[in-house]
Image (cartoon, rainbow over all chains, first blue to last red):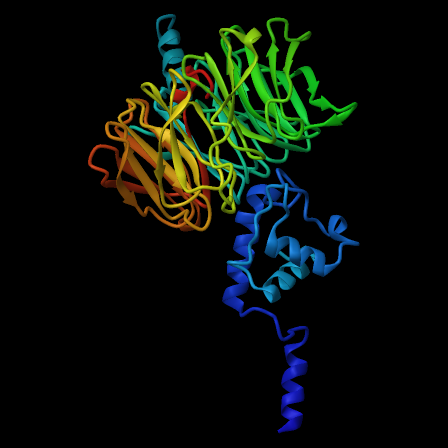
Length: 102
Length: 387
């Protein structure tokens, strides 16, 4: 039984505890493309908000980016999304952005 | 034989044109995700053609030539495309900047101006050839460039626009397009996010994101400078989050009233144009995005930002009250009235539908398929100031 669990864990590969369910991933990708994209651009090259391309995010820690997503940024047009996105989901979205996996 | 030739010529030319097409009742629906423009007919309520490969249209707007033959599409990626609606074809396309937000056509129809985020500024092109005629960087604070928003045409062959980062309004005279004259109005308020010009071309109003109220420029007396409208409204209240920037356009004027979205409040503000005072704040379903008057000014249609963007609400101008809430579909992004307002077309992005309503009965008439539609623009805009 132990071996089986280990095997399952291995098969699941990069899936970590906080990874959203597949249909939630679709919803988050749609949100990213269209609702984040309203300000950051459909191709995330920026607009009213800055570009969200991997090279722009490089050097910015996950915690800082997650805080920006969840709590917004004062003095800018970036609103807080914590009502709609959990902390784990924000981290997953940041991973998606870092890999350009949208 | 001599008689036969002209006849043959006539037959050939007729065939070449296939069906003659008038363009006064045409329009363009933008398909956001695919970067397409659908040419539609508003009388027959059907799609005529699909024009593809217009780039990033996540934010797109369209103006029309005064002969209503050409549609100019301004894309997010700086693309400017001139579409020939007679031949269902792209007649010219350029990439004029890195990041763009919208554009306008001049009073005489000969110039196209585009407002850019990157590099921040305005560029002016020949409407005929798309040749660059003037480049006006939106410089402030010794060389910084501001994002430009709220670009409109104004009488007297002028354009007016606002500098989001600088908090300025610029009045651009393009009578000599290669040497435009700029008049700058500074300290107009923090972060103007969009602007409108009244349908008569007199008042330019920029909505402010960074502080309450609007900035008003009377183009009949520009020497009087900027007047602030509702500078204290909601100052002490906590702002609700704004998940999509509202848009301001000229339709929001109905009779003596101006209807504008509040920012960070779920209200439509009614302002008296005579004294610029608040008449009423009408509570609505969410953060308003577009607040548009039916062409006869009898009622006002409102759509909303995420997460309330599945709804439309209609305000009766007679007593300034809500009369109806409609739920057309998921992610209602835009609407457009037919030229005299008997119908309104509504874009529901996540339902991949354009829904047509009768504006009198508020009943749905028909639906047209469109993939992630986000903007609807009818050729009747060709003859309206500010559109």
